[in-house]
Length: 186
Image (cartoon, rainbow, N blue to C red; front, side, top):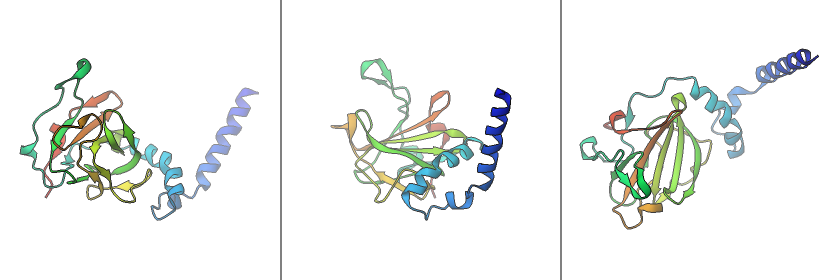
């Protein structure tokens, strides 16, 4: 009996997925509610792709040679820095380093104003200490390396430091050093 119920459930799921409006769900011109509703499907598709081997420097005008390696630098509370700090003038545009979907926009005590983008291979790209967010940026938005996410700032635990972006890359296994992946923007 349990097998029959499971089989019926699988058949109903297959029928529902087959009849789902996939093109409409992936159309970013739909209302924000639809963008958010389609996010789980978009995320599932991203997990099936190979992760990016190269990422574009996420701060406009910053050259790769101008980024000091801050990976695993000591932090208060015996923490190690899990990203790269990219210094620039306050309000310099922060661009997505890759193609993906915005999965979180919000604040926390360490990162201040943050944006998280889900990319290929299920990698999460974390942009922190933003002065402000890009106008009209919303969870579920499709982003490309030309998309402005926000602007360099000093929010969160960066208060009192020079303006910078904290850029982190997280895999299923944990944080990885973004610096070896970064390449110049043209």
